Length: 391
Ligand code: NI
Image (cartoon, rainbow, N blue to C red; front, side):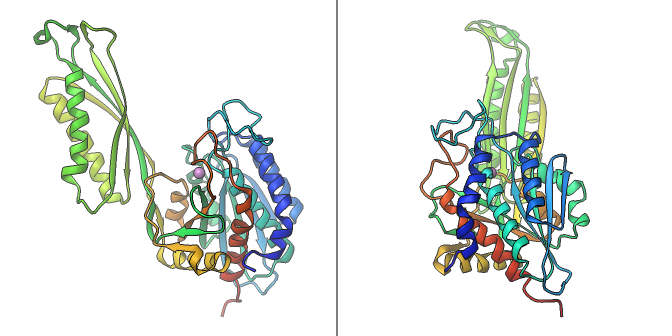
């Protein structure tokens, strides 16, 4: 039986929690009700310690094993926040809040980790300590960083940290992982090209920022195609261009926005440098200026070799050898768990959500059939990695 028996018994209860979270989505750090519910449950389960307000609204539960303490501490992390999307699933447990929904399955992640915490607090069949981490603000607010900056890793003595995310389009009960970069660094930028507006029929009296902006857009693509090693991954997408008011007026300025994604820090830093050079250089060549606001977001989510090997081995206990794809290609999306992986060795694993709508889609719903697998993965991770007393 790949799924832990007790977890199969808890499936309905965990599904209930999941749907409750789903109906009541909260955004970013404003996850007060979700965090309170998580903290209440952890207390009811009999965790040795429940800490709230870490990284503003993060919650941490500590569960000590009943075998002789080996001094080892494993951190397991889930995210609690939803997205500013209007839900269109029509499900009975659909969001009760207009314009907010759990479209990334963080409701499921939270419920599964709670299920594991309940089991681990009941059984305590391990040596050492399990630390369950519930973070706010994964969706763009760097809640994981906030918890790390708040001293979470040192305070709870975390040695290794593990994360999990559901993936639509993969089979229920299957997992996928890779060593090294698994998700991209995700930055954003705004560039204002300032020229000199005027009459469209007398362009020689103006500095036309639209023509310049068009060259900047093309120039940015040349960074990807001409300056980076083709083996490396880099995306630069200009996603917004705002300028002008009518047909016969050259505007004063053009505003460009976009995103930069990379799978290694060197490529990212080089892209940042070249983006500035291209925008400033092209603007300067045409007597305009470029005002660049570059915002570095989440770093590369980097899986450590040893912990990736452990995570894959444990996932195969739950899913069977054939149920774990090792060496899956990386994803160019960003993930806030990256900050925890910068602070401690660990690994981030993907888990199949079956044939559902995609992440961040208004018809997406976390698949409750996946609960026993995610829950069992967490349990096996703790029971296997904290199996033996220190020698
Ligand atoms: Ni997510």
